[in-house]
Amino acid sequence: MKEQYNNEELATQLEVFGLTSKQSKVYLAALQLGASSIQNIAQKAQVERTNAYDAIQHLIDCHLLSTVTVGKRRLFVAEPPESISKMLDEKESKLKSLLPELRSLYNLSEFKPRIKYYPGIEGYKTVYEDTLTTSNKRLFGIYSNKSIIEVLGEEYINDMVKRRVAKGIFLQTIHPRSNDLPGFWGTSGNEMREVRLAPANLDLPVVSFAYDNKVINLSSKKETFGLIIESQDMATAQLSLFQSLWQISSPISEIKIK
Image (cartoon, rainbow, N blue to C red; front, top):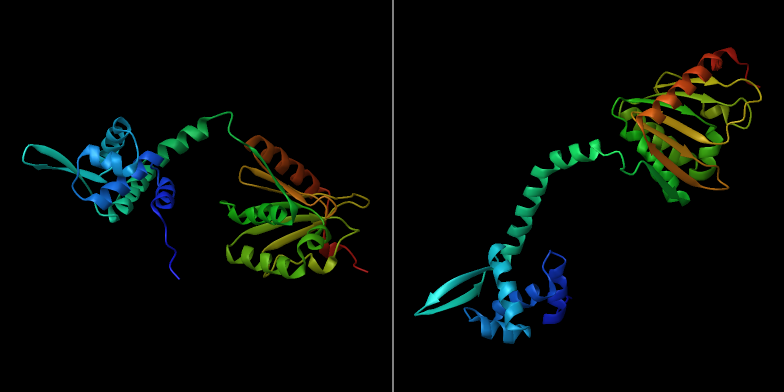
């Protein structure tokens, strides 16, 4: 059944589209009255005449009201409700034209948010999914597969691998020799992955990835949260750490799996 609104509720709904409470009430009054004077519109909208005048001027600027002359009287008439959609289209078009300029200002700012914290399983998943946004199609990971699977499950991880491969993203990854799942190490074949095993007795309790200008960290199941750090310096440092560890780690082909 179609939901019905009274005028007060309609006015509240219109505020979502950028109109103030008084502007919404004035527009609804004009819709109902047809061509009318400010006095009649103000009375119908239950707002003071001064406030009604200001609201009318704004609605005219937004192309939601127009004026007509009847004899010597200047009256105001509401444009069809479809005009609201046109108004929103114009705002969206203006925003799109401004986005490149706004983005350039954002990129110059030294005080933009750079560390994002995501709690819980959904937050953990959100951070892990961000690895699929890499623009240079390269991921560098240091982690235990067991840590991720304990939180998200095998089915989700297998699907994640398929989506990564479909996007053409190559993964270099370093795993611990113990407390991991060798069956999920994979190869550099169909899964676009090259794996090495860290030196013995090196514990890797936290999952980390470096890509583009980002570093992400995923906690253990005990804490279950994710972090995204957006910083070129941090990404460069993490990649240097990865490369150093990669040099002293062993290809899985050289390891005898028991």
